[in-house]
Image (cartoon, rainbow, N blue to C red; front, side):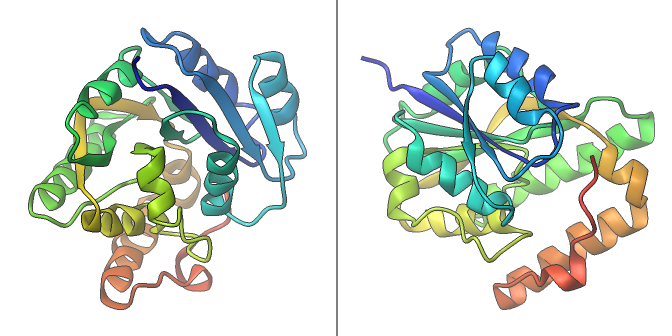
Length: 236
């Protein structure tokens, strides 16, 4: 039998974006076994939207996306854990492609590419560079996981101890790097589309230079990404 896939989405006030993601999950050529929404005290219609779409809502405190992903993983029944951000749109063959990649027993997990859902030509060029960076580092043995959409075999995720919940930034890079101890981390030849809300609200300089580049450099040097230094307020 083919492995089953649990889709896990950490949320906080994502009622605006969640319907489109859920529709893209329901439209998969290979449907997920379940959709788990790890909600962290949303004050909008997130939980209602998820429940009406048939997803299972796991409530918890607001402790960051790493904790939400771990909460979803603990409740998941699938053989494969697929993590996606709430403001992403997934290609219809995503789960099919994930399962194809996992026919290689050496693969522990992987990530997709990412593309702006509503971007300009400059946005698309910026994301082109980001994808090239992710793919190049991964090919050079330094797995990079931008975190928009990624997956792990459930057993591999458990062996790794899940996400480091104290990391509010770069927690997805961290688990990709740690996965080298148990298998290969791959980048799929697929793109998920994501909103440009962070860039629109915080601007390009803060988002790219501070939140992405500076925090990643500090993480690689120290193994930490202090939220008080790098993480801006969430954008909804």
